[in-house]
Image (cartoon, rainbow, N blue to C red; front, side, top):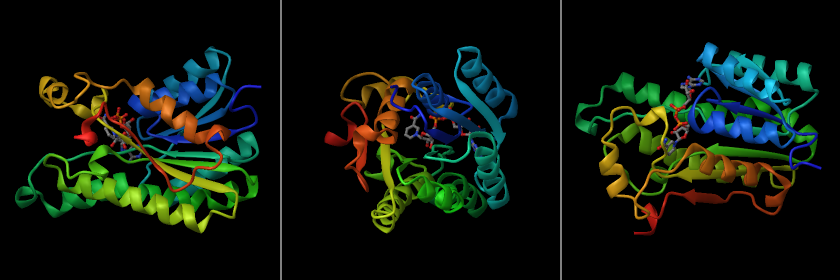
Length: 245
Ligand SMILES: NC(=O)c1ccc[n+]([C@@H]2O[C@H](COP(=O)([O-])OP(=O)(O)OC[C@H]3O[C@@H](n4cnc5c(N)ncnc54)[C@H](O)[C@@H]3O)[C@@H](O)[C@H]2O)c1
């Protein structure tokens, strides 16, 4: 049996980068995958690529800052696949300005998309996850949720909050059949990097290269699968050695 046979995973930010790689990997190993994103066309394309390859996937339009969208996405997931076993809170956005130049509206937006989204997602999914009796939540934080990071105060604060929210929820659900763990990627080659100087990121990574989205998808799959059955409240770092320094 494949690792995800009989499991249904909702992956936010599934239209691009790490979320897309995770959606494809979990589907290729038997999961029913629900791709949630605000990028409709790109998200539908990911779902189609999965079904064209013989897997099971649908796209749902999901703005992770909206409680109504979350409730609708969970309802669609249950209608389509009969339940939910796996939640990957992956959607996120960053900021770059120093704290003294960061407008409050920018701070609020990054906190909403990158931090509050994990709260809303786990809240909306909690009943279905607990009903499954063997569920896993994987929250995508960052190495900047462990060390201070460069610029981008709201991103670092949001990622630090996701790390602790994951542990808090893991303890609350420890006897309820739902595990929750966080992933802390280093610099990964995805659109979120924008026009950041790639060479600087490579030079500050001990392994001397960017990570690929598939390398983070592998970590997500491990935490989402029963292979990590005794792990909850853990943080897994995949950063080419950055935080070891
Ligand atoms: N790439 C990196 O270097 C890196 C490092 C550490 C952590 N991360 C984290 O990994 C996660 C995935 O990022 P990525 O690198 O794949 O970037 P990405 O930009 O390729 O993907 C992010 C996805 O989130 C979606 N998204 C944005 N706002 C949304 C909203 N309100 N509702 C729903 N979806 C929304 C985007 O449309 C996009 O598809 C993020 O949480 C990011 O912070 C990335």
